[in-house]
Length: 261
Image (cartoon, rainbow, N blue to C red; front, side, top):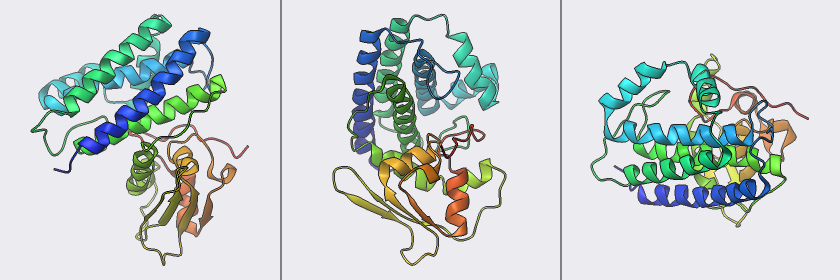
């Protein structure tokens, strides 16, 4: 199994960045502020993360218990998302933050255990522990972005952005499957620049289908926080355009697409 420590460390980095946002939320008492993910409030974003952080250790440590959990709440991802938003709306903002802190620590502790299985069940396809850790980083980054936009607060990126982008590339095929589209035979060359000066490339450099540009913009597209034509990404080739129109690095059916505006 690959070394999970660097991925756990990057999740901790993104968690600390998210905690800085939560401090701002608490200071302003802005839990009920509506985010761009209408009608979700900031508190809804926090409880969403906390709920799935609570479920994640089950998938890592007890396949039987996680299947029991799935049977108890149903397997429809959209229905589950609304269940979480509605069922935990009674929590105060401070309680939502405490819940998140407790469950995030619980997940990091579980992910740090030795002897984890090579494949685990999740709400979508089965995945590796590494992918689950990266997915929790991605979710934290994406919901943190929503909260930051609502607050007008934009924090510096951390190295965890690399895991969001890597997951975005690795879910190329899944993006087509989730949108009921035929998966192309050809892949796309991706080259991204990070705020600290690093550049990462994925795929064959001589591919006619290419996505080039800022890593943050790519992350916004694959988490469905921005339409690719509203970013600084350079997208060439029909497959690349189709991918960027349907990209998603989260489990479940496609979310509501962001407009070009």
